[in-house]
Length: 166
Image (cartoon, rainbow, N blue to C red; front, side, top):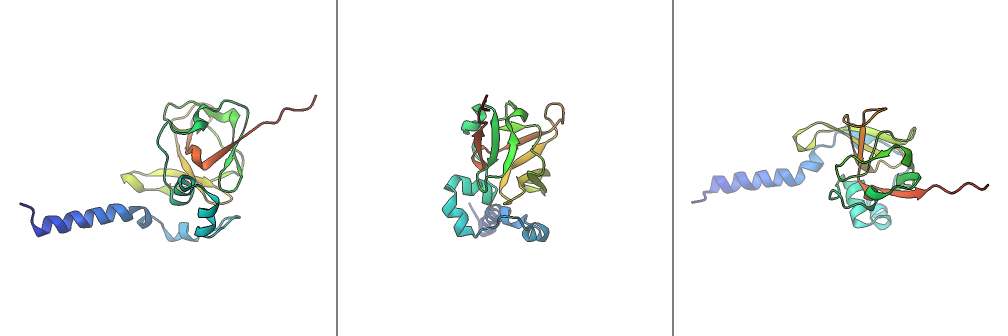
């Protein structure tokens, strides 16, 4: 038989899980300023619902769902929120994780912050210009950096390199 204490404990636990994302924001993160700042309504108007969830709410896409996983052309991966160039195709590699992975960002392209959600400490990667959440970086990547920037494909757009005129 379910008693009142069990129901209250379960409800409190579910409530904590649902609000966990907002509880992890520290005053330093809340005060962080970016070159491009927009209201929540402006971001919602500009981005698709899925892009908004990832870039503005720190969501993630299902593994193996991004067309950018199979992108093999030369070019640049840019922020879907502000068009900031983030990664060169030269640093992209197949990590087997289901998300586009890179061993190095372009200079001055991304920022980092500590992410302590899900009971572990990770390094969250965001766009330096607009603060949009891109993914996380791990120390199990290939040479020369040993890093794996595991990025959400919906957080980026691909810009193919233009052929040089001969």
